[in-house]
Length: 274
Image (tube, rainbow, N blue to C red; front, side, top):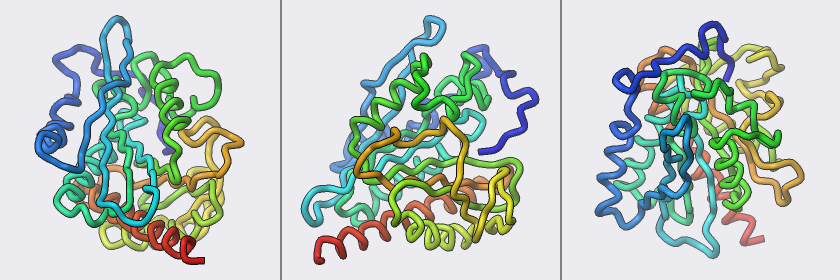
């Protein structure tokens, strides 16, 4: 989540130089055509400088298991210069489409590119110069923030997971907040990621005290559930080090996400049997 700010707003603003969101999402859009589990939603639309944009949203409906489905929101690409998370959730959805039992009982709302203009421009900030991950629940005028807040408010999520990379860290780590059980999900998730990338074992990470690669504080305005929401969803931010192998980074994220899904499903099953 930390970033060196020098040059953060300097982007490749011409259309020819932009990174392609369509190319990123092409594998998912191909799957949607035949998948019984994966649905694409393009209803969240906005304009920047007269150009139309869509906030991509995919819903993965796992096989029925138990009673009401477990609703999890997974968010990536809120910083446009962190494409690793976007590629990781594409890899996750492709894996789940081939192995849907891994998402049994879940409705997964996945947002691969939460900052479309920043993704196109290779910049942390949006094209309007805003760090969107400092903008939530601040009465923001930014259309991306407003759309994401609406999703957070209407999704009735049991859990919210965000993916980031950190160019000041040499290892994988996580932020936790929300429901008390979050601490029981993050440990196994980090252990799963450790099979692909080393963990950040420092006592101070991103300016916050840390223990066992876990940070319990975060910056104001980050993507999270609104204050006062009850019941409180679990909230986890997964952070990968920058400039590592794309393959290992993506699979570290996927392994951590799979661990969280498996762990939370066990918790829900246990709670239902109490």
